[in-house]
Image 1 (cartoon, helix red, strand yellow):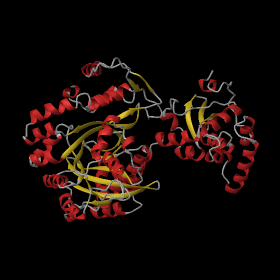
Image 2 (tube, helix red, strand yellow; image 1 turned 90 degrees about the vertical axis):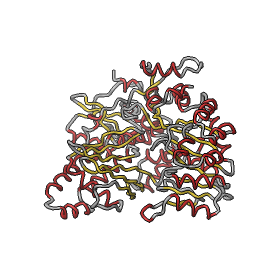
Image 3 (cartoon, one colour; image 1 turned 30 degrees about the vertical axis):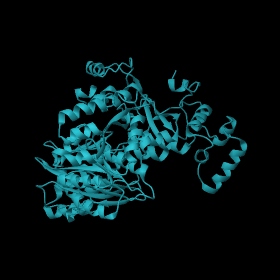
Image 4 (tube, one colour; image 1 turned 60 degrees about the vertical axis):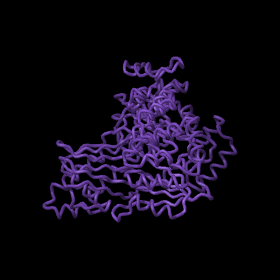
Length: 581
């Protein structure tokens, strides 16, 4: 017996066209809604023209899953949970995306003589007839929740074929261009293949939640990759000839010099993707096979995270809030690019932002808009640098200053002087961990006394991928993972590591989303004296004693113990052996 059918306790019906029945009558018969509620929704249908099921879901009378289950029982067809069903991409693509989205239907299983498809509305006879006509196959119907279908469409119908087709069109365009002037005109035309290709690339990147897009010319061709949950995935590969017009178009959009191909350039622009504005930070780099372009995608509509929702351990969060309550000093958040430093800083600003405080941010670019803040974006083209803006900021009578990044000695020294003179300064720095941060400032040329007297606390952080809740299962550690576990043994007893096996919900990766891993170092009298004396050995010995059992590695171990992440992820973020102390 089909396991999908036994899930609803019914015997399978032979493949047939669905019956003509009224949804409202089915729901009343199964006591999911009352006759009065049905009458109300029928009146609303006459006014709005929407389907009965959609109106009931929007009103909160019934969930889309309950609706699909009710239809499955009435029609004696399977109900499918798309979160756990082993969906195959090759089967899904048997049905064109336009057809799938129009009729809210997804191909699930190719049975040879028939095709099992999931529908959110199995009563839609027109959809059944059109699908049968287009596919020229016998169709077996299963019911599924409409919300699950929407997620499945965005996850499974990647724009790979569309992007590849546009890339081929651009190859032809480049091949037909007789000179550079004609190619330039083609690149600048809004209807040109290069424009449509980039639009599709951005739409696909936003559809899968990518943070970056990489356009990389190689010897054998052009590779376009997207970074999802911190890991790069190949989006498409194309002829290397289209690399030049792609880079040229991107530079035009960012207002860069299109004639300069020998030097790196940085710029930014905005694009509109599915009624959402995306800020794009562009970086170009000359390589052996052409210009490489990397784009960081920042959604203007991204919601602001709160401190208690970023995953920081509660004892550390309590100490961090105490630091933020001080009226002066420097607080640094450290970690590599893309580790969530700006998110942490803005969560801190949202925590302390109040009408009685003057808060000024100096950023490149302004990544979040927060009401009540004075936000300034630096612009190196007109010599509006971090240092120059920061000097002017101090004359604006601020209480709190956020500096996007201490990227040079001048900015670092001005920020430290501001912290010494009665301002709370928040900023970021690229260091490996919290303990090495004071010495990074000294290495930049900042006087030791300034570091010792102004630095209040350092947070180091990374991002690890979270196990998919739909397919997470027990995992037997590899020898390398077991060795790390043994080295981290803190006497809390055995643990049962978990890891996602990969399913349709996580696109086969085993992971869904990311979470921060943190460590916090607070400066005290002993650490301050060691920093003043520029005594690295003494400082590190005292700092390790303060942070014993509270390092990045120990936080990652706690997430493994809770089943939130895998051992592979804990190891992937690159801990040193010293972190086990």
